[in-house]
Length: 71
Image (cartoon, rainbow, N blue to C red):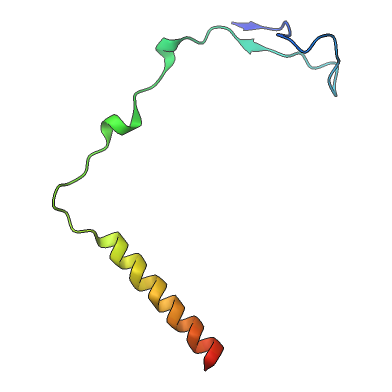
């Protein structure tokens, strides 16, 4: 169900006057999906591996850059 009538903007033609503006009038609030955060699960007491891995990678890159600059 699309409505090809313009919903505002006056009588100004756009860049291409052959194109018609369409609005999906069949959309409703029942068409929403589920909340993504409702399905997130976090394991309690799991070790935080990613922050340590990122710290090691950043430290390695900083040392490598210092070696290239000062070496």
